Length: 358
Ligand code: PEP
Ligand code: MN
View 1: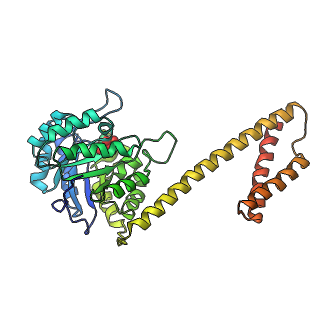
View 2: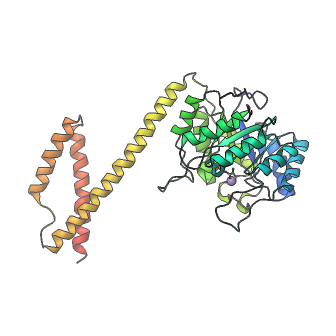
View 3: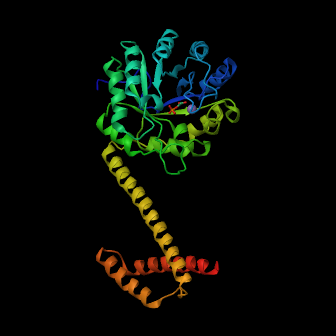
């Protein structure tokens, strides 16, 4: 990809690029008050706001639309902050360009659709505008790169990626799973492309933002996009994840900016290994849960047939067999005995509970 340096936006070696502003523009007053407070934080360079909101179900607040562009123009004129909005139709692009918006971004729901991305790219053709492309909702790096390429092919060289996490079917602490290995791989494949992390949409809740923002800078990501609202609790969209300008100020000052080691390979390798560990732990827990389920089935069966819970011969056999397998795999015998006893204890407890049910 032919990507230009972002020197006009910020100096990457100074501080990560900070983009802040409400999830949605709700009124001119809300936008202006929030922007004035944000403008007092010198680290923030860009004001964000959604005007056309992609809502999961119809009937919810869908944004203020075109009138919000005038408010953003006012933000730029009065505070000097650059402005950015999400565009999802060619018509949005035309309007945003007409009102002099500095940066356009493509949302996670748009990036899953190559037809739409192509249409947007064509609407941007040749415009002197910076474009940020969020990752698609699904963890598909090729789709993300494809969208970046489409925009780039339309002549947009000021290009940035935004990592906002991925939809994940399993329950987790986060609204969108960070899957850091994906943006890291993007960095490896397209090193000149800055990656902005959007902790707000990864976390979905305020109390995790500091931790994820720190992780982003520790992983040498280039910037942060945070949702900031003058009155987060009463925001019309994404209320649980927005913070006040004051909290943003604190968050930025609490960030520990470590020196870049000059060796991203080390960090990348470490993250890859840790991701592998996370995966293995997940598998290990699932296997453990499955084992205990079967133990309960056996419990039922024994009870129905009037057989005792503890069967010494079987247990002695398990110990000998598992110790032999485990030590062959390089596991410490003492550790193995402790582990097996712990599992056995839990198994007996489960079966006892089943026996007591009758
Ligand atoms: C947003 O930034 O407000 C937004 C809608 O984000 P995403 O496309 O990441 O869900
Ligand atoms: Mn939002």
